[in-house]
Amino acid sequence: MPSVGGQIILPEGYSTKVAEYVRSAGGVFVADEVQTGFGRVGSHFWAFQMQGTDFCPDIVTMGKPMGNGHPIACVVTTVEIARAFTANGVEYFNTFGGNPVSCAIGLAVLDVIEKEDLKGNAKRVGAHLKDLFNRLKSQHELIGDVRGAGLFVGVELVEDRELRTPATKAAAQVVKRLKMEDRICVSTDGPWENVLKFKPPMCFNMEDAELVVHCIDRILTGSHHRNNQQSSHSRHIRHSLHSFAARSLHSSGCNHLGSSSCCNHLDSSSGPGLEE
Image 1 (cartoon, rainbow, N blue to C red):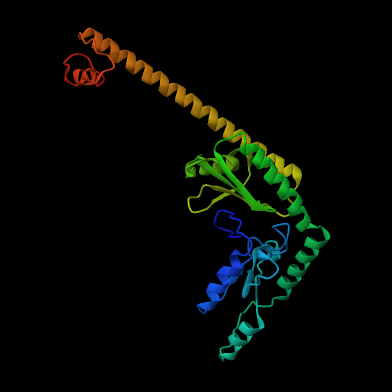
Image 2 (image 1 turned 135 degrees about the vertical axis):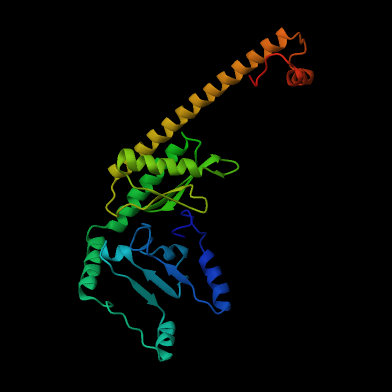
């Protein structure tokens, strides 16, 4: 599952086929688990495992969640690649590599994930979060799609569900208001930055999920009401302009209201017009 592509769920077997093409061209398949790993997707410990048991990347990278805020990262690879890396005679050196404090913290994080069943929590709460968003989707046309796995969820905002026109400005506004009004930090994602990206702490619970969705519902409902008021105001202005034009035509002696000749008459009339 791409972590910065809009939370798109890849079909099972997709990565296996891609890896075949990559390897046939002399490349290696790298799975970046910095955002999606360590049980966040709920069903598996690593997101690449969602592609099936027969798929295995050549390199797996992991980072930030590994230390729960403490700086630590790791790369896992195959024996073949590891041997090729050392066989070239170039020694790899890292001043802070294998730092005992970082390693101890990494081990503690793994203990907490297991003891507090954070992977299971991600699965349960993530399913509840998606269900809440899907209910919200039935109430707001602005929500075009809800997707993701575990506590890694994307809510795509669109101006038109059939055309899937990205609602980039609306997404930015939701993010801004969540931060300013509710102190909730969410980001946008996807090629058009119209996907609300949810990757909360692994201790995120049911009540937290309901609070977030409630706040978004309030924001979208308020925006809908404002848009309706603006539309009503626009209709009122158009009606007023139409009435003004009709009076102008009547005073100038035109009896062809609604025909193209009236437009020509308005353009050439020396009497009061819309420009005034």
